[in-house]
Image (cartoon, rainbow, N blue to C red; front, side, top):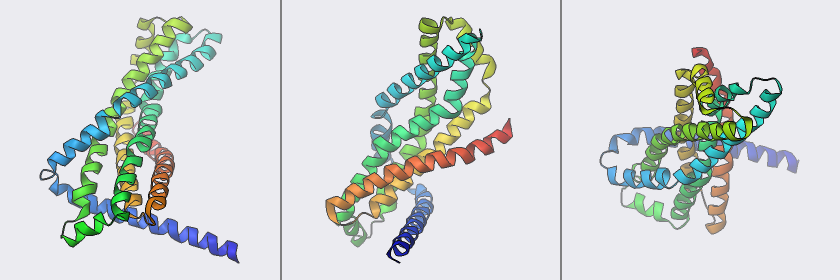
Length: 258
C-alpha cells in the first residue's frame, strides 16, 4: 500500500506543480503591461541572461556544428557526396540543434540561477515581505526574467545557427575536403526560410518555458537551503524534459508549413 501511496503523492505533486506553473504563466503574461515601468530591471536581465550566456552558447554551437559535419562528412564521403554536408549541417542547426542546444544551455545557466535566486528569496521570507508591502512579486521579479529569456533565446539561437554552420564549414574544409564555396552553396540551396523561422519560434517557446518553470520552482521552494537546492535541480530537469517534449509537438506543427 505504501508504494501506491507514494506513487499517488508523486502524481498529485506533479499536477500541483503543473497547475502552479500554468497559473504563473498567465499572471506573467498579464504583468507584461508593466514592462515599460520595469525597463531598468529588464535591461539588467538582458545582460545577465543574454550577454553573460553568449560565450557558452557560442562554444556549444561551434562544436555541435563541427561534430555534426565530421560525422555526416565521413559517411557521405564513402558515397562520394560529401559536398552535401553543408545542407545537412545548416538544416540540422536551424531546425533542431540550434534551438535545442541553445535552450538547454540557457536552462542550465539561466534557469538554475533564476530558481536559486527566487528560491532563496522565498525561504528567507523576502517574497512574503514584498506581498506584505503590497508589491506583487510577479511583475517585480518574474516578468523581467521572463521577457529576457523570451527575447534572448531566439537571438542566441540565431547566433548559434551561424556559428554552428561556420564550424561545420571549417571541418568540411580541413578534414572532409569540401571547399567553403561548395559547402555554403549546398547549404543555401537546401535551406528554406521555414527552417530558420521554425527554429526561432521553437526557441521563443523554450525561452518562456525555462523562465516559467524556473520561477515556479523557486516560488515553491521550502525548508531552507535544502529546498533551494531541490528547486534548482527540479527546474533544470523539468526544463530539459519539456524542451524535448515540446520540440516534438512544435516540429509536427511546423512541418505543416513545408
